[in-house]
Length: 390
Image (cartoon, rainbow, N blue to C red):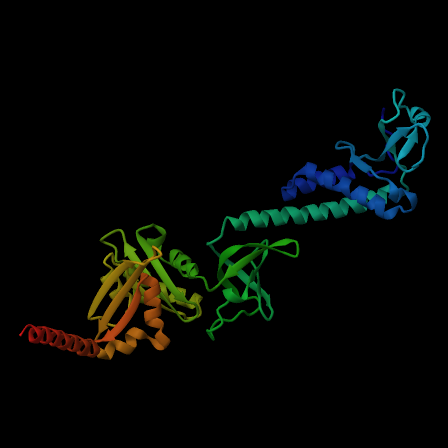
């Protein structure tokens, strides 16, 4: 049967608003209409108390062309009405125009709602605002989920005891405690300061997606070199590995696919301008650029720079768990020992991470003493065996 529309309804206001917002914000128009209809039902149940809250099924429909609103409930056709909120007699159903109705059928009964225009406007506003938030959240999640491991710039908004909050355009992002450089006096998270970050992922916070950023991840150094060094961006120079102690020091191993291009020189730049630019971005964090070598011994020698190395002996074995273990014994001149180890062991620690080898550094003098002792022990063994034979 034809539906009787509620009077004093907003006509084309809701339709035009939905169409306008759908176009401007790239939101699905039908989803907005459905959200408003759900909002109308919720608003009806909230606003109009009494027995109407006992109605089991309330629905609302908006005419997509005219904006007219129809609010109705489903009622079961019965012979004797017991539940007035959800049942209707067969006689009453026929009076409403349902001539072929039978007991057990469900029919729609229009609900006359006073002040429906105000109710509809409020429901529409709430539903549209929620839809805008949902759409924006979806865009943020989709956009930044595809940028994990990429670099982005942002403006510091505020900070608290654990987190730093950053404006990265359409979204507010967060730098957690482990993503902050805290051991460098040049690293400041002052409000309105613009900095570069690495996108780590997207997490949900308070019902909205939050982009997680980092200033400590080693990949940030790689991405900064890609921005600063054209040869890396072009693919002629490759960063093979990075070892970083954020805020203090980083070692970068580079390799050139073109024999005519100096990988290390390209990264350092004329008068060190390129690497200095990156160091400036990283609060003057020291950066060692070394040449990657296919030969492990040569690579380890490079990785231990600025120390000079006399000899490197490497050993690669497989343990009982099937894991590959890489070990290197490095001999350095006595005067180079402290430099090779580095302050608090940092130089050798970074070199080990850069190369993938466990590195044991020994002085030449100690190695000489050990070699002499081993030689003497060998002679003793030989003399003992000779004495036994006599």
